[in-house]
Amino acid sequence: MLVAAAALAGCERETIVAGPNVHDEETNSAANAGVTLPPSIAATKTYRCADNSVINIDWLSDQKSANIRTDQNASPTHVAATEAGQPMAGPGGVALTGTAAAPTVSVTFPGQAAKTCRHG
Image (tube, rainbow, N blue to C red; front, side):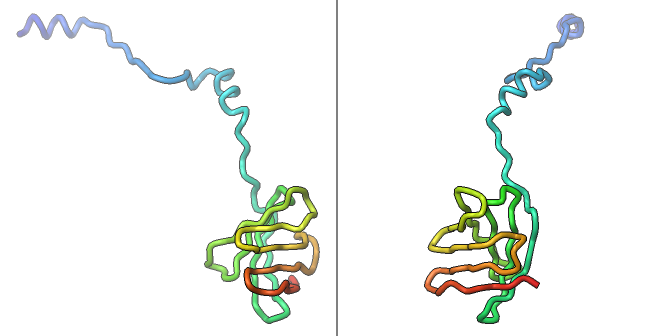
């Protein structure tokens, strides 16, 4: 038994790592070339609507999408347009027209008429 332990003690240990070499800059650049990060929040604004309701809008940095919340703690509804400055649409018929710089926006929720909401 001592002979076996002595024989194993003399063996050289080698670590084998599966997958790409994470230290290879060319491999990392190629692997990440198609990655697009989501837009960040450029502005968060609160609006009071004509019916006295309040909405919160997170305007995103791509300038063609936003997240709308009807309650500060509610899950947001994402709306987007194909081009910056165009009306944005979301699931179930939610629509938003306006920009973060405009003092008013128009918002439509399912089953409701469009309403104008003012910031500030």
